[in-house]
Length: 355
Image (cartoon, rainbow, N blue to C red; front, side):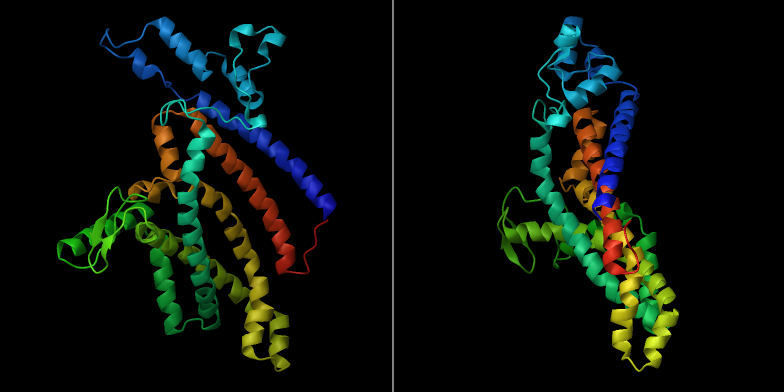
């Protein structure tokens, strides 16, 4: 196990180094830049001089060739004078020392770590709730559908799963919002259709007055995006588990357990389900980077200002420090999830050994 972990950590470091280079290179090749709107301003009274633009470029760290920008993004620029590049020296410490830079536009001059830290709790609440509900619903549905193959219940769950897999999240979200607005218009119970918390107290039909920022307020605002994400994720998870269970239930050791008189519940839960979980483990561990990234489309549809919403805003405004920080952490979590899946395989199936 120790040898495996050391080898994987080395591989992870190499993959992350390559990932950071690719991320930075792609963003460097994007046409335009954060100061293009200033350069294109037709009003001479509001258009900054070229000297002002140069100063802003230096403050942003984009006055260097993109190759040197990558090096200083990684290692900082406090050492450039020592290598004969004093014109590029600055105060950045680099991501190696935990400095992800400052925002250019979304929240100007504020450290990226602070911006992400402010959005992260809301995204964690949304994604962890949706993921746990998806797994708790998918496992019994998948097992039931496999054990009672082609039964009426199997057909019902299969139909619901196909609907969940087929529905685009943006369309489903918009339909939920339209339904809530219709219910509210007709004087029936309705849920908030956007935001993380309310700006002021409000009234929900059937629940009375809701205090802005209270636990109930946050819970109600989670309900609709969680519903969208739960249905979509649960549909995929249950189909994977159903297919895996059907394969396992045909194995010789399952028939042998039944022939020995082992109760059907033990056969399904102890002998079959444990091995059937291996494909599902692969799917579930990759929800770790998904939890970090948030639901990009769902958060945008419901104006839920988490990390997904922040990423979309940063892309639209070409706020590359936020974008690169987001993608960097995403890459770290992907390689970590990959290693975690390998370790969990040995827990689920004792026949698998790490060597």
